Length: 439
Ligand SMILES: NC(=O)c1ccc[n+]([C@@H]2O[C@H](COP(=O)([O-])OP(=O)(O)OC[C@H]3O[C@@H](n4cnc5c(N)ncnc54)[C@H](O)[C@@H]3O)[C@@H](O)[C@H]2O)c1
Image (tube, rainbow, N blue to C red):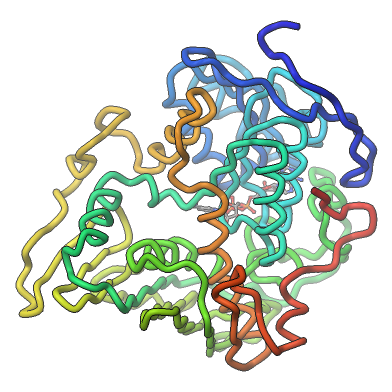
């Protein structure tokens, strides 16, 4: 066996076809080249490429997308940034059989995240999967099991976990900078336009609609879904709470040091237009945790009037002071008299412990951390078990919204929903037959 040696092979009947996957991937030795494939390159996947190409001794060997224009965009960007053209594939299962690939980054629609990540783990690949790490709570749990079973590094794309100023200030908050941090309030605001009423039309020739839907139960192709608008349909998306709420809810959970909620209540709806959009465009979710701590998150998809001067951010309230974040790698700390006592450095110099050199985007830190783990087996900043806890809160907000009442959860048992059959049903989803993810 060459340097990329595998332990053993297993046949998996997964995702519509029986493919033979290696059970465990090779370990990349320190200093060795890390070889990566990027899946889904219309929007976010292009940022994956930009971040990954900043990392030394790394090759993006494959770009994968089921839509021709997005595929071409990904291939062109890698070629432009590295001078080397990656292979282009539509069906990511073809990548899984390639033993030279160490890791896959996933920036597809949400319904593909967990199924693709599980298959990648089973094929011996490490995984960087965008938030939300699952389309529903059960998928996050499945992905954790897959990461453990196949012994793979799985990092979720909640990149604030790797931002230097936030990492530093969170440590100080945990060490008592604002006393007991007991309440957090976060928000996200945008000016999204209505999406209209979709017409069923023939699937465009440049799109593999069957593979785009993959694990999701089949629906007709309509002219207002691809790209991006799928976010607002429950069959594929998870709404603004999981789309953008994940970032601030994750930071608030991080600051408060809480894991699973005991009580979740959501109010809101699709208030600003009459169209196909199913998820709320206006939503306020409150979470209660053991130990007298709580979080509140407000999403306004269609009115971007800023909170605290910023379209997104969070505030952490403590019994000795307050921590204000304006959406990026920034902080302001106030004492109880509201006097500013500490502030993050401004602008690019904000990257105080920059491992990548000045000028890199803040995203890159998280990818750097992931590739370090793949190469050197160092700890992930957002290991999937932690990513899942934050995404679970977003899902629970949506579940409370969908059943129209407060839900109660077992904070000592993975945040499982209690005494509510309708809500419990939304812990998992139905799959298209033959595409059920299995660990
Ligand atoms: N971490 C962040 O800050 C951040 C920012 C933006 C988006 N995201 C996440 O990234 C994901 C993608 O978002 P987007 O805005 O780029 O969506 P998008 O709709 O613009 O792009 C998704 C791409 O995935 C492709 N795709 C669908 N099924 C596929 C499959 N089976 N194989 C390969 N490609 C497939 C689509 O053709 C499309 O090109 C979402 O889950 C979103 O929440 C994260």
